[in-house]
Image (tube, rainbow, N blue to C red):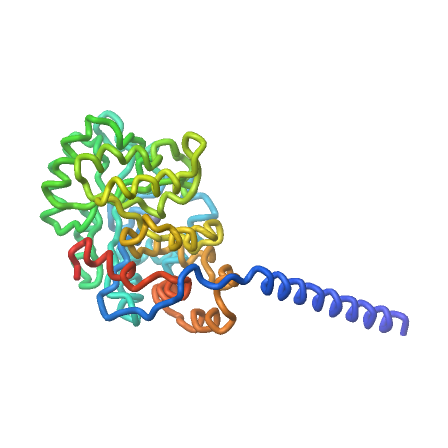
Length: 368
Ligand SMILES: [Zn+2]
């Protein structure tokens, strides 16, 4: 009998604590709720292209690889799961299966028309791919070949400018249909402000290929020289006239004691050829940056829609993380979209991203 009374007392205590937690949460929401940074507007009929989407591979029927260290890490199963796949599936069906999954998602998507799949070059030492220092490698010709198989996937090349034949590779990439060039200087270990890359930049202009380059600190990789992703290092290609897209609005880390995002924003007025993508800005570790971007006048007309897929499927993004900007019914409406790309689009639309941001990627990359 005593045991039963104790149990009832424990249950009452538990219910009481739960009630207090719920109330504290509701009070915090009531005080903190500020609504979206801009009034949500309906999407228009123009095509929407996600210009920032990743793939990867373990070398199963491809030349892709991931480092041994990464392969042994817990992160990797998690990473492939976010592609709706697994190491076992890649071993059985080849690395190409990830692109099929992405294309299938797109076929089911209500809003998204196409995705740019990004290659990922590695570190180049003595003119060759340095496998010791490269964590993830996705060759450009692999992405060129595989994206051709799907009408809704586009080719984003990646060429480390330290390759002795970088310019010839870039010409080939253009012939193969590359719509942009992707760099991750902090992980590929080169300095974009080095004048020895001027011929590379001049060729980019000649071939009319925009440069999508990571700006801000990189935390997905073990080895990263973050000072190489300082937005100010992009002044050289900008002055030459390259169309530069800074990934994630450079929204993490500092250089010279100043936030990288601020360093990027103050360059916007001087360089009309500078753009920024909004991929990954809805992640839990980047809360607040989207609202800041939408309130920043000099970013008007410069933002491009991208997802950073598969990161939107890792659990780092969820509408509930934006409870201070969304109503409960909006959160429900976003969650009702089962397609990850649709969920991303509707989340960003409800947060106040205007229709022109969704359609700008297609226009800039001439895919409209
Ligand atoms: Zn990315």
